[in-house]
Image (cartoon, one colour):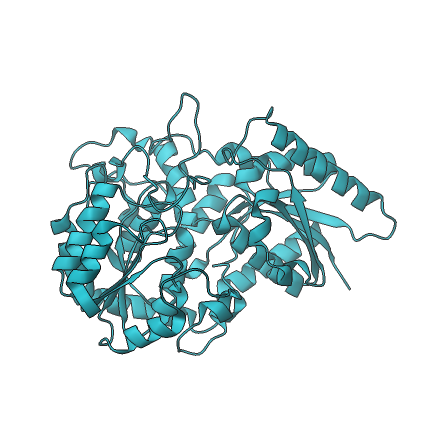
Length: 473
């Protein structure tokens, strides 16, 4: 018996659709039917194994390759509104159809809430990034931190003292470069604003208008990681704020303390790469425990070309073994080729797809040089791997502060992120991270909090959501 139907509207990019699909799994397990509303550009990211699940419907709506928040006059947006309206109208008019209880809407597609309201369907605002990022953006705006001066640490009322804003927190490059792939949907804090350019720390959060009118909020996180930030968002917005994640595949949580295969965990087949999972396991197996630095910036963003050269020089100078996932765009660069020749077996350059979960779960991996995108951050935290954080844009800066200042499981590659990151800073950061026993111990303790199961607080939050929705009937 179904309690009713819940719509889940996902934003653009795999960092949005994958958590949205996992959320649908959790809804199914609690007796709901789930309809995933996805932009048509994401069709290839939704596997048939998901679409064919009993109780799941996938509704693909029109989308354009432009900004994640297109203007109201955008033809693709207008078509998406019609697609969604027609579907809802047909569903509601069908005799015997389960009741549509609510819609969980990614803020990127917050404009769809008008369609649901037309059919008297309440909306829950959905954040696929951290509660810390949302809380820091909201708190920075309320506290007007844009004028923080040298030597000042301005606390944000209601948030941990460790998260006080300093001048170095405000120093960022105007816009991250993307040498590893094409421009994609921008994460929190980098949405378009009138007059051009990304918003600055202390500006009104770009996600605020898209979630206004929501009856509750959901975050892709858990209280074990971010309790004060979830509480802050609930208090400030005056509605329930639930941490229902991290929304990673069930096999990520229900595992033994052993290696994880990305093929098994994510159901992915080997993509184009110069080395397969077996080759990575073989290479890691020859390295001492906790000695390998894993370097990856994902496929959506990365340092400048000059900084990539500095990074290559730093990896060549450092004595620690490393794996650098350079992606397919950089795979044939002269700098990478020279580095590979110089370091020999001390380094493994992965050109193309890298099995990140396998690498992070291997006992030889002792650190993660990361941009601190939220999905990668959550994966590494759950596996007890500490960070050398190199944020590029948006929520990555707040995730870095969470990791370094609040959770205390890593270092920041440089204090002033408005300047070019240099080789000496990277070498120093690598040495500090890899040799710091206290940081590794804290990372291990955080891993132990999770154990080998989905976070208990998120289970309670999803149960609270079920009760909340039922009370609205």
